[in-house]
Every structure is written in structure tokens, then in C-alpha cells.
Image 1: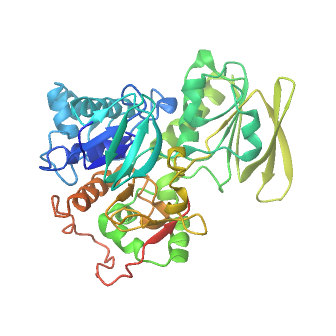
Image 2: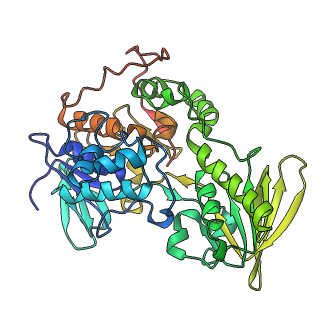
Image 3: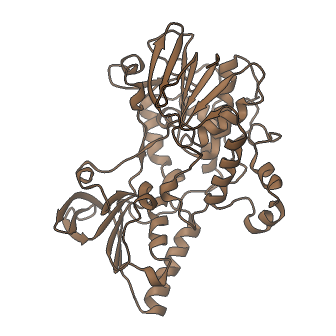
Length: 434
């Protein structure tokens, strides 16, 4: 393979954004390796009615380069749907349509190489060497990790994982039997709500009973108010990164509903659907929505499951039986297995990554070799990190860092709230545990 400057490992929306922004940069030679045969975005939970929760302007490129050929607006024009889309969608769209846009962009990028599962990464002289499942070896002086976050199950549920116990991220892959079954959905965030909405959608395919659990005080809406949305701006990311680690951790707790709440329209749809089933149709499905409950245990007895629920208000433990339990319990960032050879050089004595402002790692290796992370810096860069809102800005920042010059201007965005823009922050890298 010919010499290249940067290897992107994994191709989700984050590295696809980087590929699109890197494409027109003269002198930058990128290559992106993806194990799948084509682009897929959360295929296990791409439910038919799922809607994008952000504006379509928060696409691969528009917020740093609205003239790019890889914008969502250009996709609508090129596919002949622009006028109907404006009428049908406004400034949002379905997730299925946004995935189609991602696929369209990926198909235009010569830097993307499919069916290339990364097996290992090591140092080879003055470059990284990346070996793939096809036997190919790629070398570069910089890596960008874009392998995404891993769905998490409680430890007690892992041994039971299968057709009856699963994470929401694999719901469509597993395609569990739900009609006429007793189903428990764990998690009061957007994913849990989308699965609940899906389970209730078809009168002819309803479960016998549905129990929806939230460990929070209720089934809470996403905070989408104007001032809250300033946490999803470049200025706030800069400010957040310069704060002490304990302050950042506290703020992330306060900010959680800005990212993990449920869209108000979906809450209304579920509420109205339950009203219709109860009052109009005549309760063809038994249901319980239980707030302040945390699942603390799960056992199998024959073909049935028993979940132990801790009541956060009373302290009591109660049990519920079911045929199916779907855990919508979030995701975690972790180092991929192919970096195991380099792990001792990437983490400190506490197992933490040190992430600089430009998303590169401060690591124990040649300083001319750089490793960047995508979607792995929430604890250092704030609540927006796993969100689509700043994907283009983050990728542009990585491009600028790679070439050592300002390809994309990133320092002129105004905000209403006076976040600290001073340049005298401590330059020590922040830490994040993989």
C-alpha cells in the first residue's frame, strides 16, 4: 500500500465526518478502514419511526464548511428530494433518511476501505503499522480511533444474554418474540422510549404485558432549551476542558438530561397511545410504568425470567417476571482490542487516557506519532462529545492538527453565555478512563 498520513480506524458518523472534511485538503493523504461491507448506523435499533434528535444542519460538514459537497443539503438536492423534504421534515428528518445520507457520502469517498477489520496496531520504525483481517498492512504517522462506544449490560445480565435478555442496541438483530409475551424494558432514556413506542405501535402485535422501568424520578424529557444548547458549542467545550477533573465530573451529572432525556414529542406519542389502548380499545395490553426502580438482579427459571427491582424511594426490593428483558442501559467508551499491544503506553497508572484539546493522546511513544480519539472524550470535553452536534467541528479540529495549519477556521463562533475564552488554561492534558 502507498504511503499515507493518517489512518482512521472504524467508520461511524465521526470518522465519516473526518473523511469528508479531509477529502479536499491538499497534501493530506487519509485512509479509513471499516470492518463492515458498507456504512451502517445503529442498525440494531434503527426502528421505523425513530427521528433525528438534532437539526440536519448538524451533518458531516455544514457547521464548519457549508459549501462542502458532502452536506446533507447537497444530498437532498442530488437525490431530487429537496422540495418534498422541506415540506415533510422542516429542519429534521428520520434517522433512516440520515443513514441514507451517510451511505451516500461514504460511497463518494475514495479514502474509505470496506471489509477491513483491524486485528492489531503496533510500532514499526517511525510509523504505526495496522494489520487487518485480509492480511493487509497499512502504515501511517497518525491514527484516529472511530470504533464507537460499546453497549453495556449490568454484570448480572451478561451470562443470560441471548434472545430473552438483550441490549436495546441489538433489538432488530435479535428480533425477539414479543407478541403475547411479558416484556420488561429497562431504561428511562430515548432508546428505552423508542423501544416502548415500537412495542405498542401495532394493534395486532402487542405484548401481553409491558413493564417500563426508569431509575430516575420519572420519564423525563430532554432539556432542549436555548441556554442548555450552548453546552453543545465549541466555546463551551474549550471552557469545559480547562476545568479541574472533579468539577467536570460534577457538571456532567448536572448536564445529563441535555443528552439522555426523551424527546417531548415521543413522550407525548407514548402517553397518547397508552390512553388510546386503555380507554378506547379496552386495555389489550397490561402495562406498568415504574419510576425510581433499578434492576439489581436477574435469574432464569425454566423459560421465564425474574428481575429483582430496587425501589429507590422506599428501599424495598420487589420482583417482576417476564419472557423478555431489554436493557437500554447506555454505552461506554473503551480501548478496542486491537490496541492491546500499545495499551501500557496509552494509559497512566490509573488506566486513564490523557486527551489533549485537539483530541490527540498524550502517550508514552514518539511524539511525532499521534493518536486521536472520536466519541471517547465526554469526561474531558463535555456532554456534547458523543452527540452529533459537534462532529464536524471536532473533525475539523483534528484536520487542522494533522496538517499543522488552519484549514478550517474554528475560533470565531459567538455564544450568548460568557464562557471563558481565555488562552491561559493549564495545558496539562485531561484524563479519561477507557
